[in-house]
Image 1 (cartoon, one colour):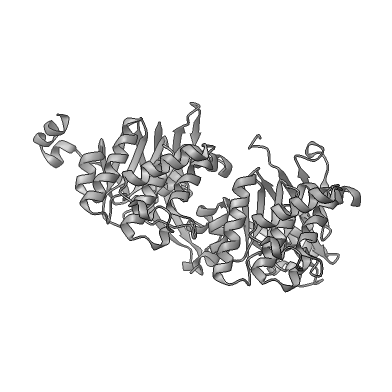
Image 2 (cartoon, rainbow over the protein chains, first blue to last red; image 1 turned 45 degrees about the vertical axis):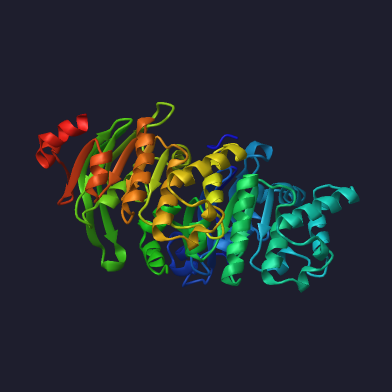
Amino acid sequence: MDNRTPVLEGNHITVRFGEGCDYCRSHPEIERGRCPKCHTIWAVRDVSFQLFPGEILGIVGESGSGKSTLLRALYFDRPATSGEAHISLYHQGKTNILQASSQQKRYLRNHLMGMVYQNPMLGLRMGLSSGANVAEKLIAAGNRNAGEMIGRSQQLLRHVEIPVERMKEAPAVFSGGMQQRVQISKATANNPPILFLDEVTTGLDLSVQAKVLDLIRSIQKELGIAMMVVSHDLAVIRMMADRTMVMLGGRVVEEGLTDQILEDPIHEYTQTLVSSLL
Amino acid sequence: MLKIEHLSKEFVMHIRNNAQIQGFEDISFSVEPGKLIAITGPSGSGKSSLLKCIYRTYTPTGGRVLYRDAQGEQIDLASAEPWEIIRLRNREIGYVSQFFSVIPRVSALDILTSTQTGRGADRKQARRKAQRYLEAVGIAPQLWDMYPATFSGGEKQRLNIANALITKPRLLLLDEPTASLDARSKQWVMDLILELKKEGAAMVGVFHDEIAIRTLADQRFEMKEKRLVPVDYAAHYGEEFLDETAN
């Protein structure tokens, strides 16, 4: 694949809660993205980025900086107020997916994008068996052969080290780390070229964290999936991301190679952020 | 292959009242294939910063880093797009840091193998080559399947070097590759570096160790007051040394 053509490109994406007023429309750098006059929240403001095939793009920033909202807008969990996003593999990148019909969005979510949430309850049906969770994704992509699906679900879950005998159990009875692994398996079931990961290891204990990150990295290497990894944890970003964007108050304040962001940050906020790295 | 022109680096520390710290200024030199440039100087003089500016871990604030890639195309590393830097790091430019950040829960053999397979090598061949390199830097076979987090400092450092050299980079940046190694380990590492040099790689290295400099370097510079000053070999070692090395 041509590595210079981004697989996903975002242009001037804004997610706003509230109508905005003359003041905040003309002041892009309002503190924390919240207008002091009309209280409109600019959760994501004028964000543009490119995601190249097979790369991991990290997004860091404090809580409320807009990093999760950006992912959710791209995955259609939340409507974007304005802006465009294009996937090179979808209509040769000519369609603004943020304006796609709900049918198109369903197709995009089932074939071209996957999402792993911090909270497994958002990505999984907790009452359904883990095998059925994965199979659900396969069905959504048009798979109808039951035998094939069972085989494929087992293969996918085995890949994330869920033992076969536990596939009939619901994720509700699994540990946090196992739930994340089922989520990863479900999100990658249809080999999407793009995967979003939203604080996937936050709240897991350190050894489980390492295991989940290892798994994500090996899947990434094997399948060459392009990933956007949101984390407030710089250690996770350092380990995972090739490039990193730093968000503050809904805006991207700095972006570059991950080692450059961590070792030679230019923006004042990034310098503060990095100086707190343990 | 690498031509550095008037390179400067200045740091602006916003969290220290916008203090400006000069890393180094107006540095120019070039490196030909198969040659190694050694840079010496006291710690804190900006040697590592220079290497990091070439590798683009630091963003230079002035000057150019002109690199001719394998396709013969000239690229200014100082201003190249991040994806271009990533491409070159994956295929052509290697960097050995003083400190090895180990990947948790991946064995030494797997690290060296996946470094190669990540660049398209066949898994079986990559594994065999990984074993050869582990042997070359003197890491005992019983350690090959262990996690390097448990290794000694010297073992980690040697694994680090093997990992950087195994993909045969065209340009290799070395930040004190032989520091903290004992005489025998140093020899193993120097042999590997010499081998890669013979194959035509261009190298820039920061060194403190005289033996390593004499064995490896073709030209020597010293960082003095934030600038790079050539060190005359003859003046430094005497003519006898030059004759000796020529033989």
